[in-house]
Image (cartoon, rainbow, N blue to C red; front, side, top):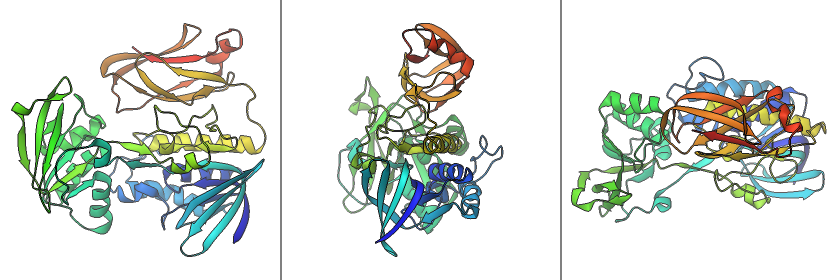
Length: 419
């Protein structure tokens, strides 16, 4: 078995893994990237639409262009080694040294000894089994991400008459993409009373093409023997389908855009504690998980709405890994709590005396909302928000002086609320 030593090993070569590894390697530490696909870039490679990079690079890029910015830096850095077509299979922790075992169809088994591990595996799509749509089980039912790969990478059109379940961003983008390649998108069915995707995607991908969006509706039956032939759609009242008001849509394809799940199977295998609100690991102020020396960033930690935020968070994770390798992590950290109308806040801890950036999601839809951060019942910072909804992530940065009160009070838990 091939064996090598590194300061850090990053699992995943998508947007999170690239940004994190680039940050670690740029600071003089040796780092290896394990990527199960044959190329770097992850899901970005199939996202040929623009809209990436506006925050991180201050210009508009396609997914492959965004990935290439990082890939070029990665491949030019001698401190970073790549293990493509390699899947993380095992893990052994021997005190300070951790060993990751990977398997490659080309080079067999490898053992990578390291002081730090970064989980950056991204997320996966929820499928029909996760949402339990009644009816037959014909062909022509697939996730929106798979359809995106078929059209943009493989060159196949999955169907001609398409219905999309869920208004997640990938589904919205595929509504536009399928229209461009000649398919007819007959409607997007959303169970919530508000869209799940970004507002800009609702406008650019549905409104601009006159594609119907059925809010507070659900599909109550799938019909078809060999290939899907039709779906029954019913409006909801109090969450209950109104069958007397249902209608049928004839179609040959059903795309599922019903949310993403952080891919944490390997995280569970190595004993990382998971947060039920996010599906990702619990992390401290430096994005280190419950397992000492194991960090997490990107969509494996929590599902982001913009890849720019993934890169930003992952670069910060890389800097924390470097601090860990230098034995320079802060000695004191205090908890962060989700307050009124907030689903979760990350990181789950903060360090007084250091600048902290937090990401959160609202539980409500509201115009002219206010984000408040409080310590011991006293608001230490507030931020006016034009509009909030669960599908759009919110961020707030606290400066060291704004957290200085934590040193003086007994109740040091930080609470973030939206009102």
